[in-house]
Length: 167
Image (cartoon, rainbow, N blue to C red):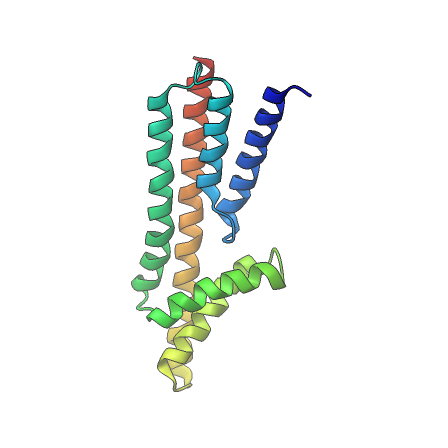
């Protein structure tokens, strides 16, 4: 196998794993997509994709990192979540990923935020359970919204890269 072909295969693999990382919290989604695109451009000697295209793709990658934190926090704050609920959502996502994949990705953040909010309130009654449920759902919606935004960024990055590559 030609060395260039091997680099292109590695670049494609990085992009595919990065796409999975948009949904799976253990993988750095769009940074891996960007790294794969950068590797493909480097393998080509930057003849098809010039440095300024990569700068634009890098800015979109940085934006994805901001979206990750913002969307989760916005969903949690919108329903009055405590810090423990946000930490619980993150831990619940990771635990859900490894214990009951793929369903854990949907149940884990909700359950973690709910348990974190109940821990924050310390008293368990119908009002605290109701609030914790709202917090769990709001935090989960923030995570889902972030995933949708990152998928949109990934599509934008693909279009820009393809445009630069084939133009």
